[in-house]
Image (cartoon, rainbow, N blue to C red):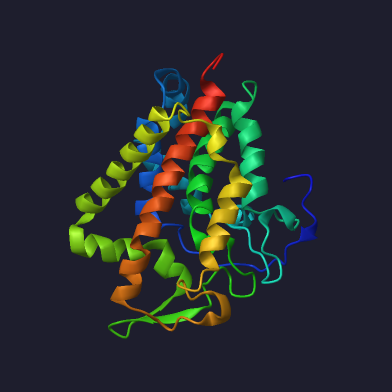
Length: 272
């Protein structure tokens, strides 16, 4: 955790659902993999033993929550309304997303670590990068990151703010353009942003920021009036709401993929 974190987060036990559901997490990691150097792929491929793809490995951290409840708190960082700066937050004793990310990063970098521990570290990191780009994973502790912010869909079905941002916005987009269409839209955005970075001679590197910056972005999105989270303003997640926030979801998955690839390349590209 950042050494200048000043305040303590209020901890509440949580029932967060699978972040970004399966689609978002799989896309962040599978698209990140395509951007990895051959050197990085050569290093991480053995760590994918037991997993079909890097994308699917990034679902593992949600799948183990019941058998390893000590990891539940690793998936989010909650801040009270009077604490809007993610750099001013401190994890509770049971941990949080930012601390878990740095802890697993140290394991992954350690070539002397036990093989299984490095495997899990890679799978955790891929998952955590997805989590930190989902705005409700930097939400309020009192409503469990939007899980207690009750909503209705247009058809009257009950839902909550966390579920909407975890997957129902994605499902809405897919209902209009199809699952392949949604994936293509994200892929096109990744290509555009990578090409823009390369044409400006910036390259794709860790200067895209660090996890505290990414958390702050998510927090700022969650606090926007148009999201309706702050003050419990939103009551119905309408089609118009889903449409209006669909591009934000695409942007967050896009950034997660680019940043994850930059992170892994920075670790495993020797001399680079």
